Image (cartoon, rainbow, N blue to C red; front, side, top):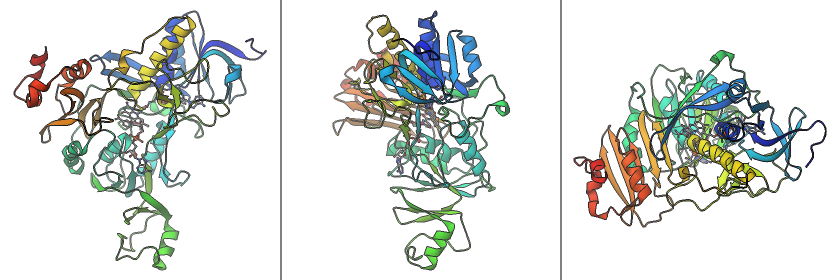
Length: 499
Ligand SMILES: Cc1cc2nc3c(=O)[nH]c(=O)nc-3n(C[C@H](O)[C@H](O)[C@H](O)COP(=O)(O)OP(=O)(O)OC[C@H]3O[C@@H](n4cnc5c(N)ncnc54)[C@H](O)[C@@H]3O)c2cc1C
Ligand SMILES: NC(=O)C1=CN([C@@H]2O[C@H](COP(=O)(O)OP(=O)(O)OC[C@H]3O[C@@H](n4cnc5c(N)ncnc54)[C@H](O)[C@@H]3O)[C@@H](O)[C@H]2O)C=CC1
């Protein structure tokens, strides 16, 4: 298709300057050194991966740096970064239109526009979400004035926040029976709880995991994204540079409300009126605090309790960022709202690929892999999408990348190293599975998920040193029935067994 005058044209265009987009553009730049690769991004900074190390077959370790886009262009002279949001895609014309009034034609396009926080009571000024550097800084600013906040959600962000916040009371409202439902079961939650309630927290452990830094610029020099622009998602250790401190002298004070959701949020005046009328909140029945404590906002939970607070953090997951810029194109959309991609990261529309948080993996997965919107998967998908685009462009075939064989994630919660492998929470295994546990208080928690004598998943908390062995056992699906409980016997060197 010929480009109209004024339309820039590139064989490969990538949208999004997060980990998925940058990795995809870098790989394309290497595969096609004589082509210009356009990277179109709404954010003024890009995310780059440095010091990448493959720790084991599927576990990886890397640093993530927020960098000015000029550094990327200097590293890859055939990458051209266009800093403007895409406002429209016309897939039938192979064109994208940007906010600054320009248009670009592509032969192959990869969409890596990430996800946005799925907020409860969206639009309420007392409800904050955390996604990018700007929203994290806004949160920090509000926290500095706060005495009490309510954190809603039970996933990665909530787990990190409730542990890190100091000098501010935290009411943590979760839908589930136990904390951290996206990463662990109730047993692991029990193991972790004492760390949360301990008054004094230790210095952070050194842990082999991704690290988050800002390279090539001082924090104060960082260009601020305009508030209406979508920045890249934060990631590992995002809170390290932030001072997450409230106004109080105490260190930590967390109260957990289980099995509940937020029913309503009342502004102070509305709350007082209702209370005066004694209609909505008869004090003897509900957990309403004494009148002398006045809060800007009151959170009514579905368990009937009401908590006043300075503001609410909604850490309630993300939705793929497909609106409004992809409206008018007939993409197949997954149940979670992402662009469906097949095993070649191809969307349902010709010549359009997608990677990272924006996409929904819709191929038949390996029995021990599942998608989770994580930094590692954004990198793996971006890299593999570029390989698939290259293979398509050259008329070659390509097999699904090995990284999708086994789900593997290393992170840190409550100052413990946490490794989750395979179907670590027996996801999708039904009742037909067994759990084996080993736990030493304040030291380690090891859980393996077994099915028909085979290891299907594991949660390793603490310095267990078991990740590589278990990774192999899950990958090779060896029949372990003969070993029974010895599999977790601390007196047996399990690695020797299987070498
Ligand atoms: C607070 C927080 C902590 C996290 N911690 C961890 C962790 O410890 N470990 C982990 O593995 N993962 C973590 N994650 C998840 C991880 O950050 C994401 O899964 C990952 O960054 C997704 O990468 P991405 O490239 O798909 O999307 P993003 O990083 O969101 O990048 C999207 C890019 O698209 C651009 N964009 C958006 N719309 C447009 C448009 N219309 N036109 C042009 N460009 C556009 C944005 O500006 C951005 O550059 C965390 C996330 C958050 C929010
Ligand atoms: N260390 C790590 O690996 C981290 C990873 N992340 C990733 O960043 C992304 C965003 O993190 P989160 O927002 O924590 O998402 P999440 O998907 O990890 O967790 C969302 C939580 O919100 C709960 N929830 C959903 N709707 C709710 C509602 N209406 N009311 C109450 N609770 C509700 C869910 O049950 C779940 O516990 C995720 O993809 C997450 O995996 C984030 C922080 C740390």
